[in-house]
Image 1 (tube, rainbow, N blue to C red):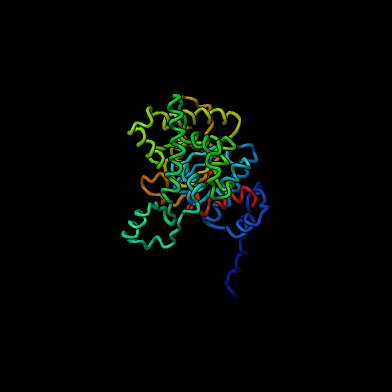
Image 2: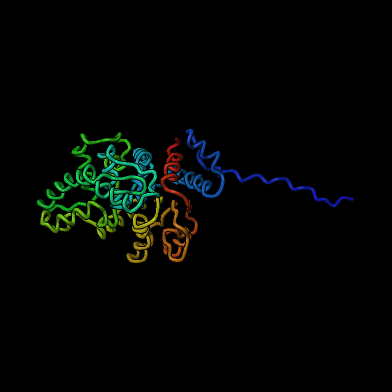
Length: 346
């Protein structure tokens, strides 16, 4: 008598959540068909939950770390803004300015695909040519940074003379909407996320602006006396006060999600607004973030905040136990455009 057990029938993989919107475009269809496991599956789940959050009346807040503007994320991010898929942004000073650098100096950029092979002498040669390298891309100092410095310095000095104070992004909005750079565009302006944000008057928060290239220039002009009031550009704590006001007003009517591209201060700063409102201001009626996703290649390790899993944020009063939470451990320059494509139905 045979004792060979009858093989169990193979178990079917669970279907995608029934509430997930169906993709309509070729990119969405490809991703949904091929991205089935591991970080690929997390990408699909996060994108579908993003759509569900918006469909239920929620709003979305996006944070930009690293060099996403130099990575030309604006090619997809700008359309997300135009189609009301993003309702507020936190970004580093570098991302704020580098979108504009790319807008006016793209033809002068140089790509270095063999950047891993560069010697110290090669790097010095780039410096001698005033080419500032960001991984495989070199930003030209004279055509990008100095050109924008000339335009923005004029705005800083005008505001300084009038006793006016603006946030960094407000100066950039004023320049873009005023058309001063329009004749210098070297890309299709539809690929500039900051221009799209300016046209939408999107709330932007720029924590730690002080370490950006234009901020270093601003400090230099203050030291040289070209700007009398160092506080002509508003920063830091004033941004947090503004964020607290905006978050409180918006979440009185809508759940606000948090989509974090990379780690660092761009994400760390704004996510803290909720525990501040609850614990420091005792405004416990203000809701927690209603969705959370982070794209990160930082490993989870002792003390690594950027690599911490979302559940850790429960202990800090930022997310609830039942908040939809996703982490995609991969390259944001690859992942973010794919998520945005699924949200846009491309």
